[in-house]
Length: 455
Image: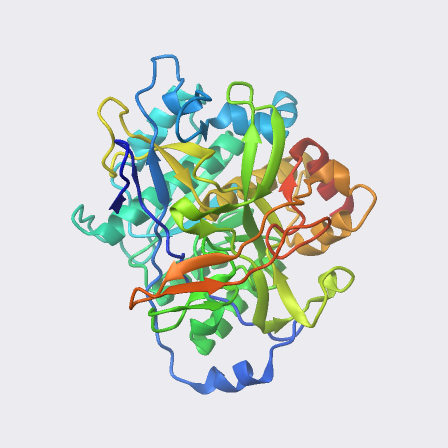
């Protein structure tokens, strides 16, 4: 945590998400050097999360927070505004609310306050409750409030659960917790979720430099992803918060790299934007690619060095490599979402609420969209990428996506020695781009297209 001068607010800076996952055999080609490395012994890595957090201020008793005032230093949105901006409300009014569908969220450690925090979130924003099942197939690690790593994972849990619920308020949520943030442990519970066919869609709000993931672990994970796809389970992952950069494998510097598991072609990678909407109604105004120098954060995106370009990107992506992300969602801190999390310290009077930003907000909300689409279809739509690209390349793209035309994911970070490192990224532009993919959803238009083309 780093204090910011000039205000009573605080921010937790995200230097990059970190994970395991994904190496592809069969349908998708691997670069030869990666395949040869698969004979090495498995080495597990820690997967850290560092959610970007800002104080929300004290609510006025009617569910309105100071950060929802246009004059506030950092703006925020509640469920009503996000539902309006992305066209979710028309479906909710039709009764398409996720009923009968299950969202699986993978996280590590635990949040001892998630039950009451979800209740506080629902009360603040007039949402009804829905089933939340907490599963720890390998055991639940006792929570240590003095362990910053566990505190940050607790914040991630609150963000994931509450905002999947905000988008699909009647969907069941299965929160599946790994006993630690070691990628081998996270893979273990992901396999449990898939083997037991827990839900329609799996959200993974974490990632790391794909080249740093142990090749054998990637191979094992991809086998899990293949099993999920065969069961028509949709896989989602955040594309990362460090722009076109990822930490080097020794954690001392930065290089241009894509994030895993978002780079796996079986996964729908979710990048980030900064949303500009009416602070009260949520009426959509515009968006740009997410890049906030103040928070040292930007939308993850680029090209894989592990995976060759899949067939569904053949008409869209230049070159021979898998491009990420596939889609995007609001990720800005200035324009972040309100989250109830009692584990993090808060400003006096604001209760458990904070403003959260990061692409980790996008994956669970896209999971909510998938739950809505599955309910409307009456069945699982499963593997979405081919359908997403078919829609993006069609004349109906304008009905489905807000295309992002401006911004980039070039970043500048200090290395371990304090030297400033600039990683030149990519620019948003019309059509698919390696910063925001096809863009953010127009849910009322996108869902019928997913249903029609996903039959």
